[in-house]
Image (cartoon, rainbow, N blue to C red; front, side, top):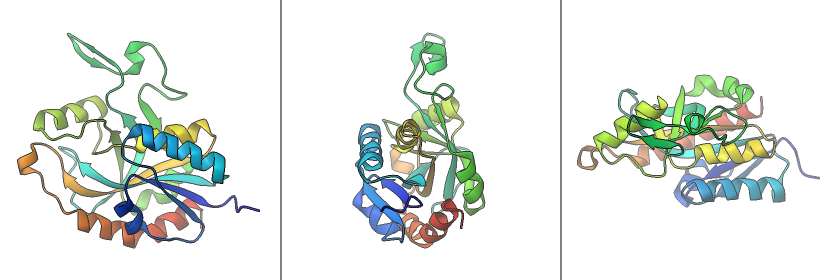
Length: 214
């Protein structure tokens, strides 16, 4: 019989999985880049390998302007926000609330992290909003627009989809990431992905214990 206290960890690429490593009581899935891969991989894992006590969207992220995050910092998502879904008008962008159709049982584009899981791991990193983008911010203009739309402190490409898919299956979920780079104009970005992987490697055991309530 499967242990229902297991944690499902969904990452995008093999390098993130290697950084997290084999952990007791953990099902680690490399889902692929982007929202479609993330949602499909999460749903498939829950249905085929569940039940799970929690789902973690993990990996690396880019820091957004005004966040004061350093490379290697951990970010814990209070919510994971779809950036692109909505309506563009002459007056500017409006999210799904303005468009008038729901994405799910959450407000607008904002998929909340599970409050119990958030309370357990909040002290391990910086708590804030994490943006889920389809297009990474390689210009100052786009990075500023992501912040304007979401108020996020970091961006990645999968988190909202993982949380959304887990929510549809009734499984609590949270996004936690290590900062690997800055965003904005590509030629001025700072990258130290090895430092982010080192953070994940050292923090993973504690994060997973906390998610289990240990």
